[in-house]
Amino acid sequence: MHTRKSVLIFQCAAILGVTLLLGGCTNGARQDQPIRERLQGVSVTPPFEPTMWLCTQSLEASEVLAAYLDDEGWEARLREFVAGFGRHSPQDDVRLILSCPVLILPNTRGDVYGLLSYDGYDARDISRLRPALDRLIKTVCETQVESFLADPKILDRYYRFVLWSRTFALARSGGEMLGNLTDRAVKGLGEADTAEFWISARLFLLLAHATSRDDLLAGAKVADLPGRAAEWKKWLYEGERARDHLWAIVDEPYWRYVKEWVNDGPVLPLRLPRAPFSGYQPTDYDYLPSDAWWWYLSVSQAKCWEPGSRYRHVLERVLSTTGGNADGAK
Image 1 (cartoon, rainbow, N blue to C red):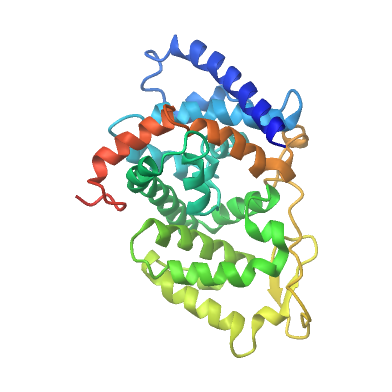
Image 2 (spheres, rainbow, N blue to C red; image 1 turned 90 degrees about the horizontal axis):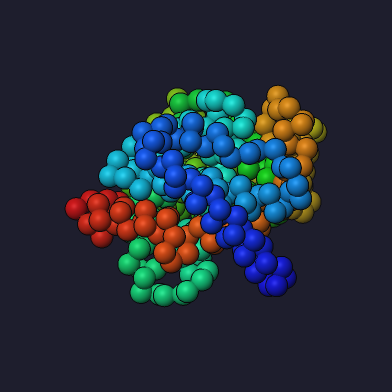
């Protein structure tokens, strides 16, 4: 496995080098080009072995986004980019995800910090850069949460993708992780306005949607989320213990409370979506390997965040504006 991973990283690095060489010739002319237009050159239709395609395309998209963020106005640019999810084409959404999956997909801080130590481990460097990484995480998750609350259709689109791609823990473990994820979401929402708060807010929205409790999200503001999450947890594990009566809806990726149904063991696994987006064109995604998304994207992202990379330079720029505080306060 390690040999295979090393070969993949080497191949990805070679392709990225060619991409940078060609891209450098036109960088000046494209300085003010909108990020969505810059990413149009990233293919979303695999022309060859799909797992290798994931690595190379993520490397290319990541370089484009990192170059776009390497600017004093990085925060406004990042917010505008993330808020575009679900507002254009399925192809644009795939490019957005490929450009920085470790921040855009529902993973943990541990996953992101692990990238910084993937190659050339330096504990002091990671500790120094942590506030900048927290601010990037917070910016992305805050933008997503506000977008999901404003438009439930955007939340459902994102939810279906993260289930289909197996990048959400519920997709990989069925109902076995529901309790752990619930505890994490409720606890994290008590962390005030921090990166952990926004990661947990995004997680809670996904969990509430998964259990068909969108009524708790209707009309909710960010300030309401800790209370709504506590109410949701109480519904799951106290009184009627809704967790014991969650039924996996046939042909839909949600659980629904059914009083007559009783789970004798773990909650039944969700029915995973058959496609990344509703209304997709099969020719666009026939070869997207949903089972392998996170593993192969991790390989490419390890390369993107290594010492000396463009994303590391972005972290240095962000750090210079945070004053050493994860929330960006000076």
